[in-house]
Amino acid sequence: MLEEVRITGLGVIDDAVLELSPGFNVLTGETGAGKTMVVSGLGLLFGGRADPARVRPGAERASVDGRLRVDPDGDVARQVSEAGGDLDDEGGVLVISRSVSAEGRSRAYAGGRSVPLSLLTYLADDLVALHGQADQQQLLRPARQRDALDLFAGPEHAAVLAAYQRAYQRRREVSAELAELTSRAQQRDMQARDLRRGLAEIARAEPAAGEDVELLAEEERLSHADTLHAAATTAHEALQADPSVGQYEAADAVTLLGRARQALTGAASHDAALGALAARLSEAAYLVSDVAAELASYADAVDADPGRLAVVQERRGELARLVRAYGSEGAYGSEGGNGPDGGNGPDGGNGSDGGNGPDGGQGSGSSVAAVLGWAKQAAARLAELDGDDDRITGLAQQETALAATAAELAGQLSASRKNAAERFAADVTAELSALAMPHASLTVSLTPLAESGPHGADDVEIRLAAHPGAPALPLQKGASGGELSRVMLAIEVVFAGADPVPTFVFDEVDAGVGGKAAVEVGRRLARLARLAQVIVVTHLPQVAAFADTHLVVQKADDGSVTSSGVVRLDDQGRVRELSRMLAGLENSEFGRAHAEELLAAAAAERAGPRPGPAGTAAG
Image 1 (cartoon, rainbow, N blue to C red):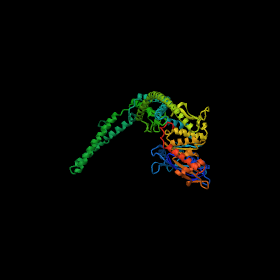
Image 2 (image 1 turned 60 degrees about the vertical axis):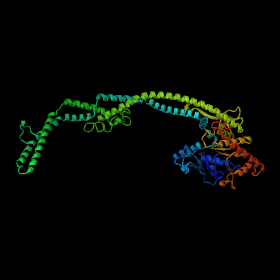
Image 3 (image 1 turned 90 degrees about the vertical axis):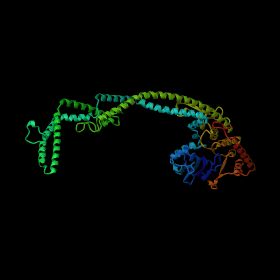
Image 4 (image 1 turned 135 degrees about the vertical axis):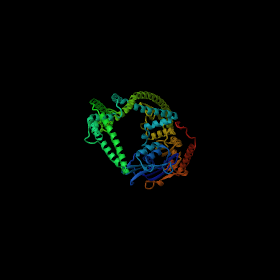
């Protein structure tokens, strides 16, 4: 609720502070004193249009500051916190501000932080309902009417609405997933076909891990068999000559090592050091003999087999084709490649490291291991794609079931709304009769939607027939400004307790009303104030008498309204003000007696029983 409002530089108001209380707050004063500027200031504070023409002449800007008591754990506090603002040290008080310069620039603040104007407008929906001559149309948006009717309908209706919204949202999610899978069916079929073809090709080739490396080494040996045989033979003869061929021209390494060892052994008896060196020469001779034997075996094993070379080269070619198609980096390109995610890659399937390296083999980025990795991923993706058909079938069945559930709940929702609309219309029509509109009747129109939405299958619109035989029109078309304020009052009284807005502001709710009807207006405002804070600008003493807090707005001698011009009246002050409003004279004996009588009657009304639960008309 609003605890305090400060207005500066707005119209006739120079600088004024309004201290408000829970319950029924009323503002009175002479015509032109600036009462309506208070309502205009509240409209500005809660996101209304910033009109630079309203800035007081000579002032740089008009500003309105509001101090509100809010739930520190509620939506309002959360929205302010997300915008970077804070509640004050007391933890439950929010300060919001709005200013407009004489040039038309507007600023908004919440919780000590500059915020978008839209935030104030958003917060207003949860904080205040403004009912002034210029505010009625936007405050009676069809969406707000539907929400209010749903609240009026009660907890059982709310449970059906929640169940419907869950089913509706879940159906939207399922439908979106189903549509995506269905729309991509052709693409998935093509991808699955490509994956099967690749997997079949790899299966036929049966590549083994490391096979490409082994084949490369074998091809090198077979291609250079003569060179390898000559190298091994020459090395063997240098290490250990073959006596059978009579090569004695040059001593081999083994013979030379034997001569060296014998020379040292003959002199070792004179120095032990030579004996140790002779032993090491013996070890070297054994090692060289072993190498020579292995070279002989290697030379015998080297076979220049053209047939085997052809087989190896053909197998390497087959593996190279697989690597180019499925093992290069390009096969996993972002556009899909031949990898599990799609067709040919953007570079035709060959990665930057693919193809043949400078040594005739596969580059570092291409290998049979990569082909096998592709096959593993492709098999997993193929299983996933094959499972999509089952997924589509399951989703289609789920969507059908959810559609049926949502349709059934939407029907229940419409029936419940119809029942609530009839009760609501009857209650408001009864209120209008007591508010000097005895021939008016209110109806709630439920129009079926072509397609159910997130709130059901109905459009909700409140309509008014001003007199018998008149067509039922939307509120803003079916009532004049003064009538509309009374209609809004009747609606708020009936909605009391259902609409969560904590503060209601009415301007000219008493337009065109007098006598007994004026007393009824005051009585109903007092009843509404038992459930929420009510702020009313009025000219009628019958209305003002019901207030819990009475503020009077007075102009200074220069025609402006300052802080001293907004006075909170005590009991005697209220008698004088009501007397002025009744008789035009503050000290009229007749006026004072009538004022005291009004106050006594209003006090008795306020002390009466509290209104019933939400959704029940105030009697």
